[in-house]
Image (cartoon, rainbow, N blue to C red; front, side, top):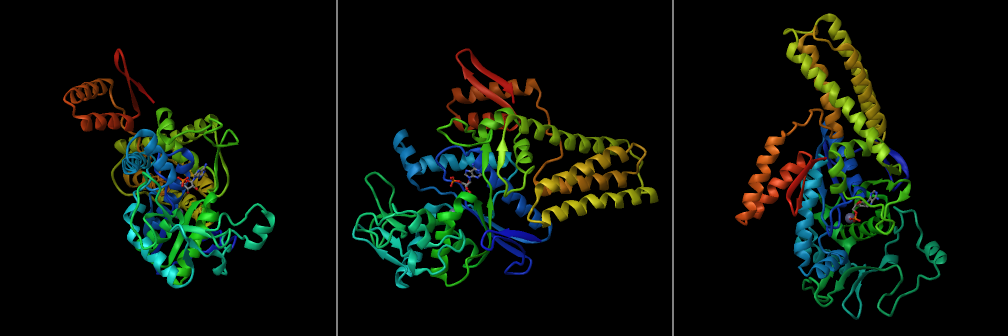
Length: 468
Ligand code: AMP
Ligand code: ZN
């Protein structure tokens, strides 16, 4: 299996540290809002990497954090007059719902930065002892970047070139020894969450959080570290500097980075107004469509989001689900008994699509080609499966389709349609729950309906609903 490693800028054969096991860390979102479809890309593609590794028989320890202390969270909390912890807790829950909708498996561990402060203090202490960190007058602790000779090895940047290219990078204030030194611990500001430390009351720097959470849950040496390409510099470069200086070991063997998701060929940004949350997409599409759309491109390529491409993903997914539904239908009417010789030969022929699928995935997880192999299998099933076939043949063909789609995290079973009468009954129950101030139950009903593609709107004339 080959993985493109950002470190070497080459595809490399994957060899895990420990046979049969993979330790994988994926940088998770900062939770101050609903996640957007850009955040969804690393979740979907690296979940697919995990699923393929599991299919290959690896035991994958998959860790993905939530950054739950950050300026953006604090600002949102101030804006809304509630605590940062309340804001992050809310959006972690919302994020988990989106992940479920996109069929992203829960990680083995989802650590929260605020619950790992102890480890952060310990790592700073080690870095201090080794001379890689220093405390400035105001209590800020900085990492002494130039002391780490390999700084720049991931992003292929050289500090001197960077400095020459950016004359404006000067030492700011008198606090830092060098412009490239970055924060490990910063003093609290009025009204901000803080923890006590030997250097000052304050909070950790973002880069430190990931180094520490990876160490806690996966150890000093991990196999794969992943995230969006914007994280290569400085986030991942700084993580390497911290972890390798503190632990004295190579931090991660393979670094994987997904390309960016653009909208209508423009960079997605709030200011341009071309910004979608996963929740907004869910109002129009089953999130399986979003997942299928994301996997239609190679994870390292930029991917353009447009209504047209989503429609085509929807149609593609429908072809697969329909083929699977047909096989199920035929199964109901099929002859019991084993495969005939002719069927066995046909079944073997369909193995070529599995081989093609695997070859694509083995080549740096080329999901675009893997999806093509699934379509070929669908075409094969459509033209070869009939009601005259044996049960065994139809079952095996269905299983084959189900397995390949399962690796992509795509469900082949059509979701059960919910009847209008059931929707009305649930809405009535929700109204009753609200009257009794049982808002937990009321929210639960809204979420259940949303998962089935039913959107509720509270209007002056009462509750209205529509199908997504
Ligand atoms: P953040 O919450 O900004 O730390 O981002 C969480 C994850 O989403 C990181 O791995 C980012 O690299 C990734 N990400 C953010 N925006 C995009 C985008 N437009 N396309 C792809 N990945 C993104
Ligand atoms: Zn990170």
